[in-house]
Structures are given as structure tokens and as C-alpha cells.
Length: 502
Image (cartoon, rainbow, N blue to C red; front, side, top):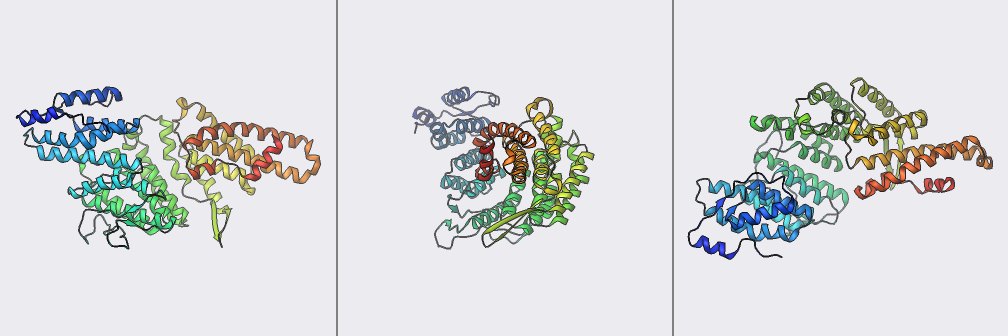
């Protein structure tokens, strides 16, 4: 590890009564990383203490660049000396300033170590903040929760920084971390995937209670992520309570001076997650009720150009913002139902939910919202996989419209990295739809299928969509999780048919 950038001579100068001063240089967010490093070393040489904003900016850029040695030097060697230098300034606000510096750097350390999968170090900085009498912010809580979702990561018992309080906050009863069964062991034995998902969800609830208790107001992103965790853990009652009781009460308690921040407004994504969760667990009436609330009350406000949502997404085109508003229209139904008996999973299309989705697509059209990728994919599943609605002409018109908007993002939509995966998914569905036709033709015609004009045309369609699918899949794979890869992969049966054709 590199040595401290705060030299011993600085310490000698301090000992002789020379004091550090605070740097009032402008925000360095626009500086390149080399420029930012030079600015930092120059400031230190002048015995100037960098501003919190610039220091965190430097640490974040060091982490993104993979400059671990420099990051470790600043945090572990320089920072304690910077705190000593700050104490030497003799300012009336020194104690508060020191606390702010510590909170900012420790928070940065939580996120950094979590991204490196260093659970022990991340928990160590989490505990430092808790012991200081406050609580990590939403972003640091999310960083830890995401790390703990990974199967091989040890699951720690965290201190939530509170006594065994029994008070209800914003309609939420106290939530506590599960404890290790072995005295003195700070790690919990995780028995299965569902056990880990339950533990992570319980930790999320405990964090929510502590955030509220310390008035570290949870962001919409935190709520949205917590709802995902509760859905995965099959904790539908807890999810319903958080979404309809805790969130409205907590958002209503946020001080006026920060209440209008886009970070706290319930986003279309969070509405989508909540509605989808109710749909997933079969509570279709409640999913419909929440969707109606979204469409009548929330969506019109989010749609306004002066809304916090519009300000947060100001870099997107107006069409892209409107497409985000349309996601809940496709989450209120679950068109594919699954059932597992003796370890064997079966799935089928729920025709009643299919009809409901087609109805919601028309409602979305009436509300003049662009169709998002989630809607395109669900409709493609219907047109390419449901016998009662099988229609490759409709599927092709749908995918061509989507493909065109994707190829001309500057005119119609903002391309997100995950869009490549969803586009590959769309192409896969087109391939599978035409393969279904080919398979049926082959069965009906026997050996005569080799020269049948209809089969020849079907093969042309398959070749066309395979040639679209494979490049899109190659572009999407580096960004895909395990489950994401499954979504954009053909089955062995489909591969066999493609080999027969290509």
C-alpha cells in the first residue's frame, strides 16, 4: 500500500502551532481523475483540508477506476490526519464538521467495500456510523442488502443502533435483526436460498425502522428495493403494510425543505413493484385496486412537466419519460401461472389474465402513453405463445415498431444498458413463434415439408430473426445475470430445429 500523502513534516508543522485551513475551492466534479488527484495532493501540501464534497468525489472516482491503493491511502492513512488537522482549525463548528466528514467518508467506505464483496470491512464501517449515534443513509443500506443477497457471502448480525424500543413509527412496529444461534458468533447460519431471502428482507425492515427512528428519510429507491426483497421472500402482508401504511406516513413526515426532492416521490418503478408483487401472489383484486389508484391519482401528477419525477428524468426525451409511466399498466396481471408438484414445475397461460392484459394495453393507448419494453415482451408472449391469440403478423408489427425506436434513440427513446437484453428477449420470442409454425408444418406435411412453399417462407422468417437475435444476445450477455441469460437463450429443442433450418 502506498504511504500517506500527509507527510510527517506536516505533523511537525502542526506541533509547532501551524494550523490547517479548510479548502474553499470550487466543486471538483468536472475534473478528470488525474486532475482531481493532483488537486488533492496540492491541497494537502498547502495544509488545506479538502471539502467533503470534493473528497467523496475523489474517493468515488478512485473506486470506479480501480485505484485501490490510492483509495486505501486516503481513507486509512490520510483521513485520520485530516481529522486532526480539522481539529486544529479551532472553528466553533469543528465538532459538527468532524462528524460530517466521518459520516461521509465512512458511508463511502461501506459502498466501496460492499462493491468489492468485502463484507467484514463494510460491516465495520456500518458499525462505526451506528456507534457514532446516527445511522447509514438509504444508499449504504441498499449496498449492504445487495451484497447479502449473494449466496456465498456470510450473513452478519448488524447493530441497528437502538434499544429495544416498542414505539410505533409511521405505522411501523419495531423490526429487529435475527440473531445468531451461537453465542458470540456475529454470523447467521444460512440454510437455503429462501432462508437467505427471508433474512435479507428482515434486515431491510429493521433498517427501515432505524432509518425512520433517526429521521434518515428513506428514498424512493430504498422503498422500491425493499418491496422487491419482500416480494422475493414471499412476505406479501409485510409488503402491503409498508406500501400502503408506512410509506405514506413517512413521506408525509418529511420536512418541507427536502420534501419536494425527486428522491422521495413514489416513482412509477415503485408502483410497478408493488402492483406486480400483489399480482405474483394471486391478489389480483388488490393489484387492480392499486393500479387504479396509480392511474387516477399518481400518474397524472407524475406526468406534469413540473413534477419531481420529470425533473429527476430531465435528461430523457419526453417519450422516454412517458414510457416509464406506462410500466404499471403491464404489472397488474400475471399471464403465466406456475405450479410445482414433487419438484416438477409446470406453467401455463391464464387466459383470463391474458384478456386483462390486452385490455390494459388498450387503456394505455387511450391514456396516450408509449408502450414500454415490459409491455412489448408480454404482448409478444401472447402473440407467439398463446394458441387463442397466436398472431405472428401482430407480433412482427409490434417488434418492428420497437426495433425502429431502438435504432433511432435520439428521436424516440433513451437506450438503457438493460434494453439490449430485453431486445434480445423480443427477438427470441419471434424466433420461437416462427419455430412453432415450422414444427407444426413439419408434423403435418411429413417428408413433403422439405419443398413446401409455406415451409420455405417460414424458414426465411426464422433465418431473418435468428440473424437479429444472435448479435443482440451477444451484446446483452456481458450485462446479464444468470437468470437474465436464461431469458435470452433458446432451449435445446429450439436449437435442434434451428440447426435443421440454418
